[in-house]
Image (tube, rainbow, N blue to C red; front, side, top):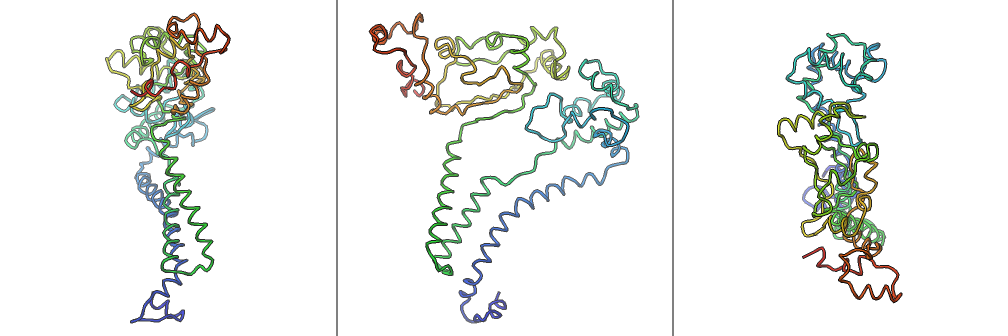
Amino acid sequence: MIKSCQQHGFPGRGTTILPCIQKSGNRILIFILFFFFMLPVNIVIAADESGGDNENHYSPGLKRGERLFYGLIEGKFQGNACGDCHNTMEIDTFNWNPNAWEIAHKYKDRSVEEFQKAVLNPTGRTMSVTHTSFNLNEAEVELIKKYLDHFEEQGLTKQKPIINKILLFLLLGALLTWIVLEVLFLKKVRRKWILGVLFIGALGWQIQLLLDAGIALGRQENYEPDQPIKFSHWVHVTDNHIDCNYCHHTVEHSKSAGIPETELCMNCHIIVREGTYSGRHEINKLVNAYENGDPIEWIRIHNLQDHVFFSHAQHVAVGKIECRTCHGPIENMHRVKQVTDLSMGWCINCHRDTEVQFFENDFYDKYEALHRAVKAGEIERVTAEQVGGTECSKCHY
């Protein structure tokens, strides 16, 4: 640093190096920006390098099994290869087929002969249609199982991290820090109004990021997780015309709509053992859970904060609200997704706009003043707001 300062005509040892720091102000900013941009890249490269070491230790048989799985050996698949249907990395799209790890885990402790039979002579209709295009012999199927046994230990490949709002927040913080240093110590920028504009813009952006993050706490709009069993509302409701109340039988008299018991599912699946899209794999999960007495750990999607009260009975039985009002077109969903943010503002707007089933409903007989106002022609309809739907104590008590 001192040598560089001397080359630029600045004092050397024994004197202040503040002018040198001033000269290097822009370089410091560039270094900070470069550091924050390159940090996540280095993390990704390191993760890739650590995860790729195992590839160098593949045996020839294991490597050939991997190439067979992905269809990289010519003449073995006329249609889709194994890897085309069974994903080997985490994905955020819906896939009816089980991922590679599920298959590997299922057959990890089973014999090679059992795996060969499942691949070459499947009994299910869905698998039979797909596997007829396979041109594999038993030895090649054994190599695929060998690869899957190895894959079961490694697990699905995780998606690489991306630059997100946290990194942007840190970069803005670095910019604000440089502006403060420039104003107090460096003093290299002559037009101070430029620093003022940058400071206000960066600080405002940071505040907006914090505000968005705070508002998003506890909200899960577009939340769409994979379930332990791929249950399709489209298949059950739209295709097979099963009434919502048959499965969610507590919806009209309970706070919760309820998750169907495994025994209730088996009312149909004691006979139906193969799905339209998923074959036997997913229904077998249900059957095994039923026979072994294991609970199915469904993932809850629509969550409200603990201080919020919501009753399905109030909305469905009394208010006659349809499921799609809050849950969206759920009858067309293969995988359930939260389509609204379920925020307080969203609920209040709904209460202000939604007309309640006020007439021929015994629940509303006690609202005598509203009945008189309707008969007198003072109001044409009654909304949830008019019967207390926007009172704080209705939802928070």
